[in-house]
Length: 115
Length: 112
Image (tube, rainbow over all chains, first blue to last red; front, side, top):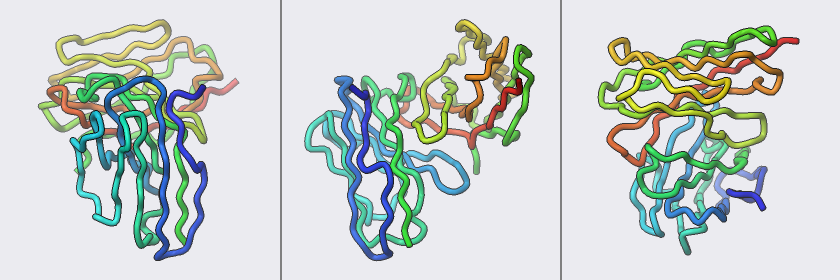
């Protein structure tokens, strides 16, 4: 009964492919996030959804498209993968949209390698 | 333009001693600070936080100190235990903003 789960854990793919990462939380939280941890180890927010609505969209290429079918799920679809997309992607959730004041619960991460 | 800086990539401390992890920030609008701990192949987990209206917050072996004038905070772990070996991320947010800004992390090694 993992609180925030992501699939797959590892993803190796060729440049130009399209791939998706799935995230689910069973905490009953309203807000979910996607973070990217690049090779320099910075953990940077990409997107945030509150009750299925997009509330944060950082400067991310439009090849990245988040989709929230319901408030327990936030998936990340990436089109036309590039070498620079290689990173660890973390999903997280928090009780409400004031995630800066609330503890965020992170998934285990998905290591994406683009060859 | 790193708004949250952790200038020590790694730190080694003898078991039983005090571990002190440091963090500096540049944005004076930050009013809430958090520490997260991360083990390999796992996501970060929340450890402790502090509001800017306080200068100290304690939770068991963990204490966070905030010096607003210096824009500096530190995490003290005492006594350090082997299970404390992990990467520690300092993070900050402003005005309840949904966005948390993370530092690069400091890898803590607790030596037997």
